[in-house]
Amino acid sequence: MITLHSAYSHDYDIHWQLQEAPTPYNIFLFLTSGELEYRVNGERVLLQKDDVLFIPQGALRSGKAIDYHHRYVAHFQYDSADEIIPLLEQKQHRKVHVHHAAYLKQRFAQLNQQWMSKQPYYEAVCHGIMMEMLSLYNREADTDWVSSRQLSLTNEVRDYILKHYRKTIRMSDLANLTGRTPNYISTVFKEITGQSPIAYQQAVRIGEAREMLLNTERTVGEVAEYLGYSDPFYFHRVFKKLTGMSPSAFAKEYRS
Image 1 (cartoon, one colour):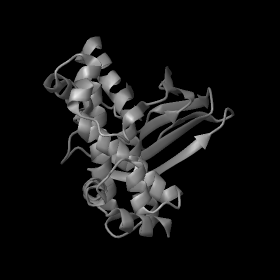
Image 2 (tube, rainbow, N blue to C red):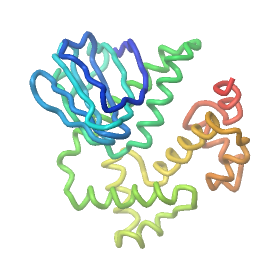
Image 3 (tube, rainbow, N blue to C red):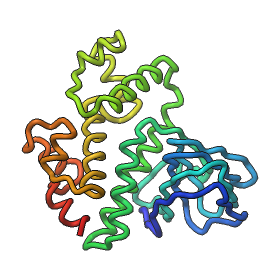
Image 4 (cartoon, helix red, strand yellow):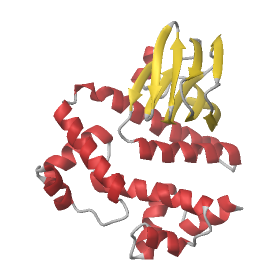
């Protein structure tokens, strides 16, 4: 069972420091920009963009900024009576460089919104999001066996999607890009990221849609058009599938 105690995101300047102290809860930290250094039980851990660090409850930790940086953080307790996450069971700190950073950022943002809003059933929703993120983190850690060639292919496909996510991307486009068959690309990409290339593109699009609905005055239709959805009903369906809310309901609730 995962019990969340706090969730937040923040920008830190070059002067940030943390004196050594035992952590009262497990820590799940995701760095989205910049660079910082932790020491966990005396071991130096350098964190860079798209790194995730798990620190177990009771570990001695200290830290200092190396550069301006932004991070998402969750503090939680873990009881393995009903749910087992292998890396949490080991109770050792672990750094993992994630390959699904855009999706993880989206899920962390949703976790923070749920935690801050305290709407009915928010605890259950937060529990579900934490379980998903920790499971993806464990999956990433399990891919140490991935060959450099497969990792390079995945990075090439992911980078292409991040640059062209507003356009229609077909598996044939990715095949022409990489010189591999669509089936091979889909299999390798899903093994490493947990998503097919097209599902990954949709997650990136909807993550951007959420940011735009929260931080701009664009209408739902304008956001859909900007992100390359020629059919607003399809945009509505994908958005609701990934977030549990319609775009208009999401904009109304969180803008208010």
